[in-house]
Length: 274
Image (cartoon, rainbow, N blue to C red; front, side, top):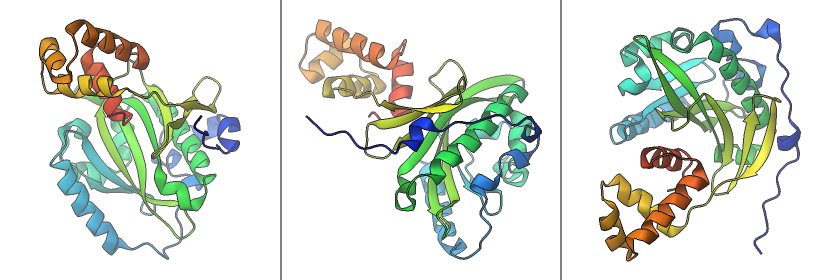
């Protein structure tokens, strides 16, 4: 039997209590003591330029929006020109707006949720050993408002570079359409493990879980479906009967709570299952 990874007990017992004085509608709610970077030592903006060029190249090959947060300057260091995240603005405008962008384009009732995620996430992160912090990511869903339309997006944030004291200096965010039906779904995951931590907005606590794993047949069905192949064609490719493919597909949907192949693909991509 494979031995499970030992998980720090803090992750399961962390609690978050709402502070009504903190819930002002301004950008200061996102730049808080938990993520403050105050020392300039070790902040190499020459290396940051290389990261920007890398993000620019990446954004040209994927459909998601990409941006980089600078927690020292308390704003955006880079924003890709994918319109999904821009809400009708140019990327230069979004760079200039910084976190005021969220004030304008996130529904008021979800700003409190983002503030709580921000605080809970950084408190969680600051308990992780410094040498492991670049291995963690946080994912969550919220709405963006653009031209009177609400779009539910998935937001995945991963640290890129740390300050000398181990705090996050730069983080990359990848934005895509959400496969969920409502905002929330806050998950911290560690690279190359099946363990994750889900944050509950009901009890304001982190709960440990184990990620769903897909069989090779289920992964193949997802990838071949993404290529536009029909059921009969998929069956021929994986040398199974059509009825067997239907069985795998039904089991796959049950595993991840998807209603159709589009939701299944989105979920599997966002959760790095394929």
